[in-house]
Image (cartoon, rainbow, N blue to C red; front, top):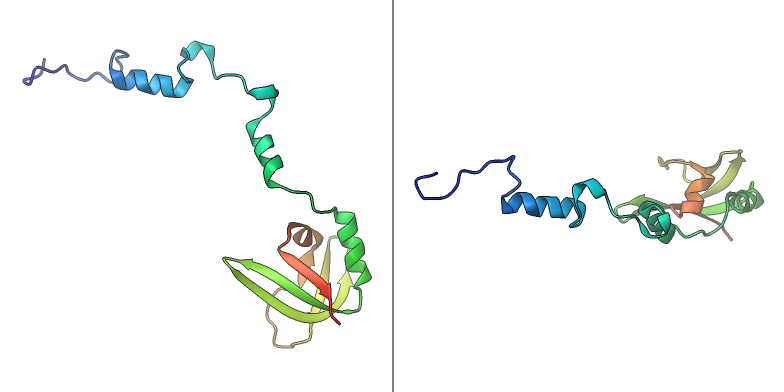
Amino acid sequence: MRANGGERWDPGAKTHSFAKKRENYRCGGAAAEDGPAPRKNGRRRRAAKEEAMIRPTGDLRRVKEEILSYYKQDVLVHVDLGRNKSADFTGKLTGVYPALFTVTPDDAAYRGKTAYSYSEILCGSVRVTRRG
C-alpha cells in the first residue's frame, strides 16, 4: 500500500480499469481469443476505399491514340507541379514512343521537363491540347 492509501500500479495486472479499456479498444469489446470481427462481405476495406477514390476516366490505348494524332503539330501543354503550382508552355510534339512522348518547347530558354508518360495524362497531372 502507498502512503495515500491507494494501490501500487502493476502494469501486468488485468484488474485495472486502464487495462480493461485498452483490451476493449483493441478487440471491440470481444475477448482477445475471438480475434477481430469479420468484415462486411468478406472484402478488404482498402479495396472498397480505393474504388471510391479512383474514377476511371479512360484507358491508356485511347490516350496513346490521341497523342499520336497530335504528332508533329503545335500543342499547348499544361503541367500540374503540385502545391497549387502549374506550368504552361507551347511547343511541337516531336516524339511518340511506346512508354512516353516528347514535346519540344517553342521557347529555347524553357528549362522544365519535356518528356511525359501517357499515365501522367491519364492521372490528370499533364494536359495536352492542340494549339490553333
